[in-house]
Amino acid sequence: MLMRTDPFRELDRLTQQLLGTSGTWSRPSPMPMDAYRENDEYVIALDLPGVSADAIDIDVERNMLTVKAERRPAAKADDVQVELSERPLGVFSRQVMLADTLDTEHIKADYEAGVLTLRIPIAERAKPRKISISAGGEHKQISG
Image 1 (spheres, rainbow, N blue to C red):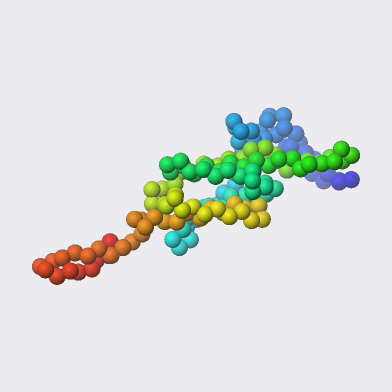
Image 2: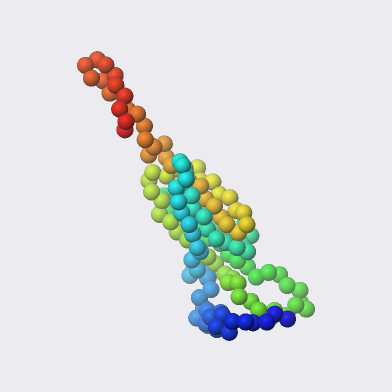
């Protein structure tokens, strides 16, 4: 048997259940996210512990990236009595507006240890490049 040491945590869980704050497909809960640039990629890391990879859906429409995931209850035998259930179940979602400077055609997704990592390359057209100009018949290189 598990001992409950924090009565307020149980109260918070009960409040969430009564208010219906667990995620549904029509009203998903948010998922924690980090976003940063690493060299020529934009990286988004989303926490989805306990979610199987086949329960994650990633879509890009125009510049809107949408990640949806569903954490389902673990299958339990008939003779199992649940003593404590604090991990949230339901649907989680996050939408991110991507800049035009990102190459949404080549997004890579990796899921390991409950973290979904998306790597979005910076578009070639957005990278600095040299532009050749001619002045009096000579070509000079300048930074663009």
